[in-house]
Image (cartoon, rainbow, N blue to C red):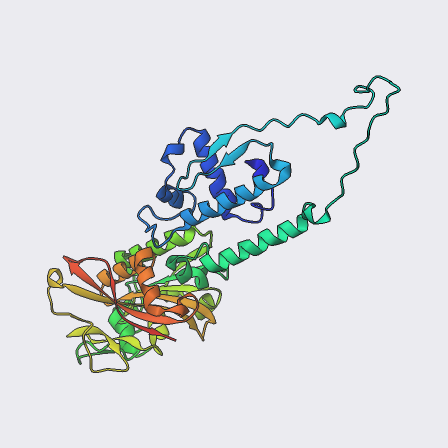
Length: 414
């Protein structure tokens, strides 16, 4: 195994050696019969246990490529007598075959003295020399290597080996810069309605309009909070926001990219300019509202009636709305916005995960790391999925405040 991994067939790749080493060592440990596609995807490629192998065939495709590279290695004359590791088509458990014995040296190679014939006076007829046929000579190694390379490139082009999954394609613009990713979460010491009101997104009744018209309105009793006030309210974060952020963060951690968490009140423009940002929450996150300000789908509402997602091309439509007067257990639907945009102010990629209510934010967070859901999103977005900006409206059913899986309602791509 180590000898194969040191050759050009494997040493320039990270994925092939990892899978090859895993299946060989597992088989030597007596667990070869348990090697299945899903197990390899989870153990070697860090896929979630319930990932869709049809949408993400990375284990199956990688095994096929390893099988081809092993065959190329043993096809070379220098390795014909080595112990062989082979992969039967349709199986993930390798088989081992003992080395072949080297053929005995031909008689002609022995010393003439050892096989000298008795000296006689009878002349011995010498056979005429064989005429050489240059066109039957073995092909130079570089010709064979070039042919193999060309065949491999053509096969890769035609069959598109190892296509990236929708999950990898979605997050690649965020991960590719290899910069620290900032999660920006709303904190509950400032009412979300005050932030949205200051941004002109929510309409207020006279008795609820905040006195401060600044970027983040503050009531009189929070201007100089006591220790108790601060400890009670200052850094409270919604469980649904944390849940959405954690689901995304756990997946990013498998890619080895550094992350950090910030609250809205402590996040500056300089922070957002240092690397990609994931904005969690909608009406209570001013950075989300700023990012959405020039997009087609935005949050709107009144503090006494409804919050909704508006379509700026059809502003009179209020299909995606939540009635604020409805009893919490009676709410049946919630809605969220997700987006991946290149922000002009920060010059970085921003991902938005924001629900009208807490249920939709949690469901949207799950959507962002679900291979099946992102596969559907890729189909809806089209060829630009890997690098274009886009925004989507999601809807989710809710039962007693617990959301189901989100589904795509509308998309804008640019």
